Length: 148
Image (tube, rainbow, N blue to C red):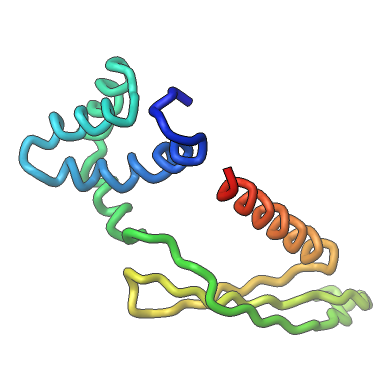
């Protein structure tokens, strides 16, 4: 990462947060290409990458606006988790199987959307343990990043 001053965490935040949030906002105003170009310069993009980005952005602007509009301005966050254990006794071919599975439901909330959908999935005990381990790793990484 180029040194833009400040801490490593601040540079990382700029890298992840700035272009997705600022480019549609800049492009939607008068002088769009110039604003996007200036914005990317502020994000420490070199001239060649800025020209390539602006060209591709202009070529795909309508599709990008539709896609970004469907996503909203923020990602959903998990508000609740529920689960239950089920046993699969037989398959479609009538083979006997006594395999436990967890049905997990994540309740999510998005500030851009009035509806609160649920995300449901089924997983084995090993898959659930792997998911919990990865979430713990992510939590530890976030703690370390905020302590820098």
